[in-house]
Length: 287
Image (tube, rainbow, N blue to C red; front, side):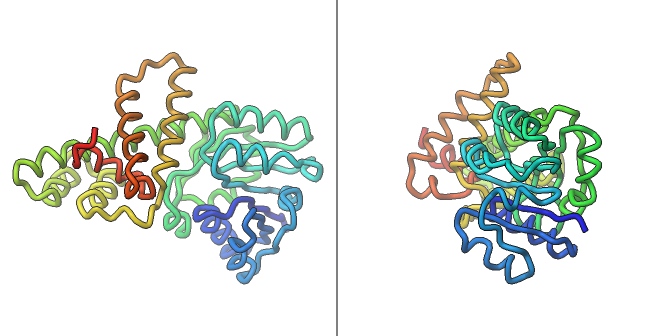
């Protein structure tokens, strides 16, 4: 039986590792905070004492918070030779390039496979997975990626391309949140029920997960608990700027979006909320 490792057990990582366990796979899990692994161990996972132990599985996965965490945790590769590592986090393309080079130098193989979806989507195995790396390596990991996702999108041979695509998707979500915040503020101030307005949008020209999900969230003001923290949204906005700059793209809206997120992070109730709460900056006229 192919052994699997999973490093990084935040809300997304726990949901993904749990999905692999439920499918009957042998999974070794590791997290800095040991308590995050307890429920998975109770469900049948093995607890790794070190990151290297989890990386020693035939195929390992990671869902770590940012570039710094990923490069720190994935620095111990003494048992990774011949193995495949699948990095599912939203990282910068530059970090992905460095990690890919590190794994290759250790005799291992590396795939970038950032995901689209929240923890409840991961629990249902309905993620969209953006995979990039050598075709043979993706093929080897595909049975497990298909347990996690509704669709695996192949983005090419260079792992960091998948990270650039993920950043670009999240940049679109940020725009959707801001567009909703601005348009909802406009109709609210004209005496229109914002719920009716969002129903109009999503029933006509803007049917889709981003508009329906964030539209409902903004109308209800239900930003806590955060499904995706404001600070992580700001991180992804920063990554989007790096991708745009590297590609020579002049992103006309970028500076305005930074203003919105920086203002949200300066408000105590918004800073700890879901990134959809960035819409409140316009609704409250905080700029």
